[in-house]
Structure formats: C-alpha cells, structure tokens
Length: 117
Image (cartoon, rainbow, N blue to C red; front, side):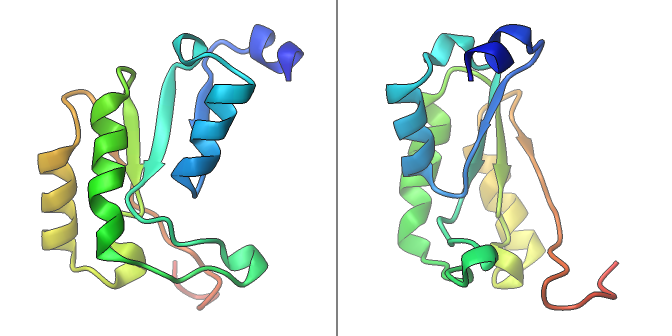
C-alpha cells in the first residue's frame, strides 16, 4: 500500500460502505493524503457477494454528514438507489446536500440486463 500511495499523483478512497472507508482512514492512511473521496448515499451492499440491493432512506443523513465533514472533494454516488428513486428527486436531493466543488456520479450496472447500454 505504501508504494502505491507514494507513487500516486492522485489518491482517492472508494467503498460501498462508509464504515470501510472510515476504517481505512483510521488504520492505514491519514486524511490529508487523500485527494478525493467517493461516498455512496446508500450502503446497499454488493451484487458480487449477493448482498446488494438493500436501500434504506435512514442511511441518507449519515451519508450526507460524511460528505459535509470531509474537507476534500467528494464524488456522491448511488444517488438514485439503483433506480428506486426517480432522477428528479435523487439528483435534486444530492445536489442540495453536497459541498461546492463536489460532483455526482451516475452509473449503470449491467448485472440485471446485459443490453442496458
């Protein structure tokens, strides 16, 4: 990990679980060395281990708190909860709650439909 960090020009932290990102920063790396963070609005699990697809509105305040308390730029993702939230509502909520300079990432997962794109 140290060689990767030293050789990197830009270093970001990504996780589908805010707790995993917090543990990484606490145990392996200091926040001032991280250039940006990708923060999911929903801690939905992963389709890779069959735990994905769980979206709870109660998770939103914690995710927004995480974004607001990180001084570096953030990429907010999973803002539409895999289509469970409409684009107008999800993008509106995310844009009102991220910091100036943060961005929103929209993506698709082809696990359900290989012809999605």
